[in-house]
Amino acid sequence: MSKIVDFKCTYDNSIGINKEVTEKLDLQFPEAYKYWDSMALLAEELKKYDKANFCGLPFCHTVEGEALGGSINFGDENIGPRAKDYICASAQEILNLPEIDYSKGRISEVLKACKHLKDKGENVLLYISGPFTIMNVLIDPRHIFKIFRKDPDTMQAIFNKFEKELLRFVKEAQKAGVNMISYADSSGGLNILGPKFAEQTVEMFTYPLLKKIEEMINDETIVLLCPKTTFALIGTDKAVWKDVNLGEPVKYSEACIKVMGQAKFVGQMCIKDKEFELKNGIIKTINLL
Image 1 (cartoon, rainbow, N blue to C red):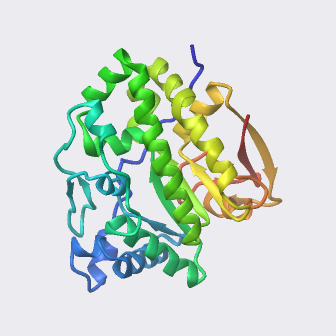
Image 2: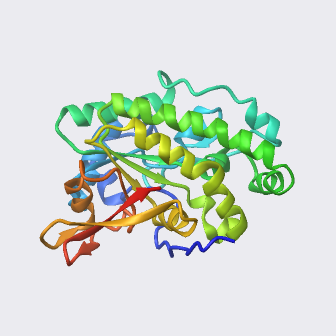
């Protein structure tokens, strides 16, 4: 049985839009969430508001699910896009979903916005979601847990489908100049899956995916893991910590940029915690075994 420790997340599932930012911009919602130019403008303004050192996109965890055919409520200036109606009721329906076309739709607009921001000299953070978060857009979670429990081979086939898509997404992100990738699967944490399924998810999906991403990304790219994912890897002996001393106290988000070229993965803290400081100047990077 795994030794996974849970990370007590204080952030909700959505990336979120700050009302003070949206009120000052002359944008129409929800259209602003759909097109690259308004996405880029929003990302720049949120960076300024948060006093951050990167521009983050997209503003929700529904982009991959929508690109697979999911039904989305695009929200408004207060609440970003979120899942609307489930389109699948069985494992086979998930497996039958078409491949994502990264040249059209909102996922294409996200990549265009990333390229635009990178061309302007910004550090660009792309949020990508794990399989359970993606499936939250597509199917009632009760069906997934039933498949996982009764038919692990079919669950593996579903994992394989999402692995393929996420690797394609990372490849397109690299083409767009993205140099920071955030991977999280808040709907697939220990507190939701339980120890047995959490360990199986690491073995069947998370570890193989991240090993392949490690080989794909260039040395100027860093992957920021949700601490829930980090602790799952550490707890199943798939990764170890490696300390890197940056020589002075530094905010975690800044440390993630400074450590580029020295590590491919970090994940001791949530990147949404803008004020978290490494007072001793040491960032814990992650080595996959």
